[in-house]
Image (cartoon, rainbow, N blue to C red):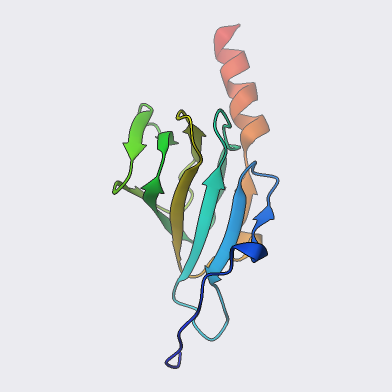
Length: 133
């Protein structure tokens, strides 16, 4: 890594299949230890269940209100200033329960790459369906 100042550019925001908008703030091979992304979830939206292989994640809530579900913990409300710690392979999703966008930083160690992302939404839904039968 070398000394650098990166400017946030919200024009680079993109929509993901996870049902949220992401702006990669810092995610380069030159800095492999960590990545930082800005995530934005619209009101009423629930992201898909997912987990990261070999990568831990931290959410730092910037604004809005959410209900976060991680691992086997019961859902917990999060608001501005809260930090969520998510170990590798821990299932996770977040729901925007507020009237405005839920915005948070997603900080991944080591840096996020698409190959570590595993969508498990259908698996979780099947498990819940079998429990209800």
